[in-house]
Amino acid sequence: MNRTIPPPIKDAVDFEIVLRPYEKFTLDNGIPVYMVKSDEQDTLQLELIFPAGSWYESEVLEAAATNFLMKSGTGKYNAKEINEHIDYYGAYLNRNAYHENATYTLHCLTKQFEHLLPVLQDVILDPVFPEEELGIYQQNMKQKLAVNLQKCDFVANRFIDKYLFGDFHPYGRVSSMSAYDALQTEGLKAFYKKHYTYNNCKIFVAGKIPHNLAALLNQYFGSSQWNGESNLVKLDLPIQPAEEKKFRVFNDENGVQGAVRVARHFPNRYHPDFPKMLVLNTILGGYFGSRLMSNIREEKGYTYGIYSQLYNFRQTSAINIQTEAGRDVCEATIEEIYKELSLLQNEAVPQEELSLVKNYMIGSMLGDLDGAFQVIQRWKNLILNDLDENYFYNNVQVIKSITSEELQQLAKQYFTPGDFYELVVI
Image 1 (cartoon, rainbow, N blue to C red):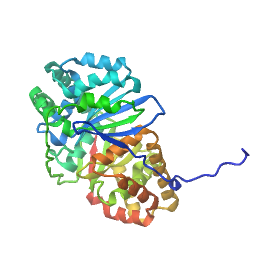
Image 2 (cartoon, rainbow, N blue to C red):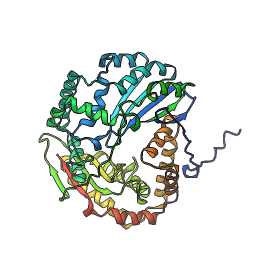
Image 3 (spheres, helix red, strand yellow):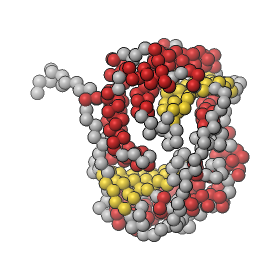
């Protein structure tokens, strides 16, 4: 090998991206299990997913509270015993409640998996929602909320979602002191019984799989119709955006920074423009070398960072440009945002910049598929949204083939200033 000659450079867009397939089997009671194997490390990730997000709650915050407090006491173990057992085996049990779904995720060494399943089974199948744990949860969450409400960035996130989707829509609904106070143990138990059932459960597994995985999962989760059968109907909840488009909120008279949000509605991931907008959004503010960052951070020095994101909500989506800037330059920041939107409408993206962004996006995607944990996350997002690998490969093809002309037309359609909500919180 002649080390004076560098190896040829290959653009990321020239790589063929392959989404590794999953394996699937079904437990005795019908729970589907999706699995991606890897023997690289002696670790395992097990995730149980239920349609138990905020979309389904009849009382504000009951989805998140139910999800959190399931781990705070069961028929056999109290919260301290649960946490000590998990810590003893070097594992981590995380829980989250989102808009549509709620999850429990176990990370552990494969050899310890069998020792952790009895406690995980109890958490999922037999939570008791102790009254004292609910009181602690309410106190902690109200204290956390009181602290966060002093932060302009936190307040801005709450307001922009309310303006986009409406106060009562799950995407725009926010926490409050009174909502935490209103939580009742019986309500949480009822929500749990309705949503955390065997027929509403999906299991995703990745990593080094034990040889007896199917037998273990059947023993602890597949041998009975736990919590009975619950057939959920997802309500059709209308979006009620604010009629006004410009808002200025005063939150901290002693603050030196303000939070800026410029956002608008956008079709969801099922719309053909969605994968195209992923590219345009990256150019605008989706990575560190984006136009917003180059202008407002590097050239103007108004902020430490500014980003644009595309929401991946199930019902609808939104484009949200967000930053924190000095109080005296918040309005100037908004002006510069609109200048960048206008440039994308009126001038085609140079080929060199487009090539850079395409390579960045494909390179990021290649990194996201490096390992079983990352692959199962990709499959999980597809499966939970009733999509298949064709959607993934179509997105890859859009990134590789989209032209400057297509991006300019997209900007003309979706970057009209009057369509955006403006918010400054200082």
